[in-house]
Amino acid sequence: MAAIVELQGIAATFPGADKPVFSDIDLTIERGEFVIVVGASGAGKSTLLRVMAGLLAPSAGAITHRIETRPDRREISMVFQEARLMPWRKVADNVALGLEGLTVSGTERDQRIADALKLVGLADYGDRWAHELSGGQRQRVGIARGLAVDPDLLLMDEPFGALDAITRQSLQDELLRIWKETGKSILFVTHDIDEAVYLGDRVLLLGGAPARVVRTYNVDAARPRSREGEEVGRVGAQVKADLSTLFDEGGGI
Image (cartoon, rainbow, N blue to C red; front, side, top):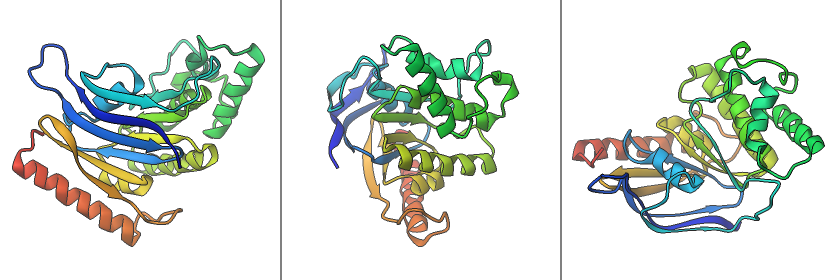
């Protein structure tokens, strides 16, 4: 695999704050890799995604992108915890939101919307309104919107955090299928350790004040995985133990 994004010594500080949220973050994401970021609330997980998405400028360090730039696509897209659908737009028009401003013909726009909705299992839902969808379906629309712009890197900020357990597990499996079919790189933030080790190739634990990557875990379980598999359980137990230690030590969390 080849690196598509490299972070070197990245720090982020909010205006007026006396210290950064996180500092000295070094991270390389390979093409087609599924990377997870975990840590307690306030550890800077979502802020890291905002920096990588270009929504917040880093206060130190450098980000290097090795992604093809074209006027008909966005190199990086983001999926949020809430689907953030526009209630006055139908599903297809919500998916089209990310395509606005790109050099895309009407025909290609319609095809991308159709392909993205098919990929997330909502091929026949384009003419529905957001209020007609379940929570899981709304989140699928959010994922479709992120995929329609043809990114190399998909940033996902706790996208399943507000869903019930059954829907959450179903969408985890759907996301793995989409990841396999598209070959996209994914950087996924979650507070759920079981979710992290089930989905990821690597899990990064953020902790400290300011936060930093305190440990990286490689999840070597073969795919498709079992949630009850030995390797998944072993890595999950280690992450939980290390996170508990951070709480006990204070760790700025």
